[in-house]
Image (cartoon, rainbow, N blue to C red; front, side, top):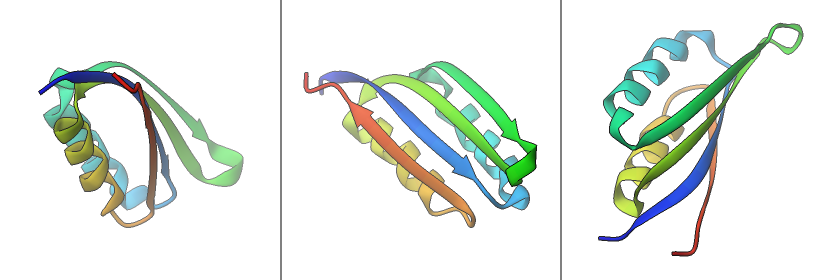
Length: 81
């Protein structure tokens, strides 16, 4: 399967999900090129931007699992080819 490059945006509103988010990111570490996390303390959320390089199945697996966590919102954008 062909690999794609993309960006995954993650917003964590429930602090109790932070540990699970980090575990998932570690599990999918082989497709993560880079990551930037910003705690927005005034709004009580954490915003994470992740650059990925992997198959659509791998990226979809990561985003699907993240999106099922309580208080976590995920959006992604991938290259066409």
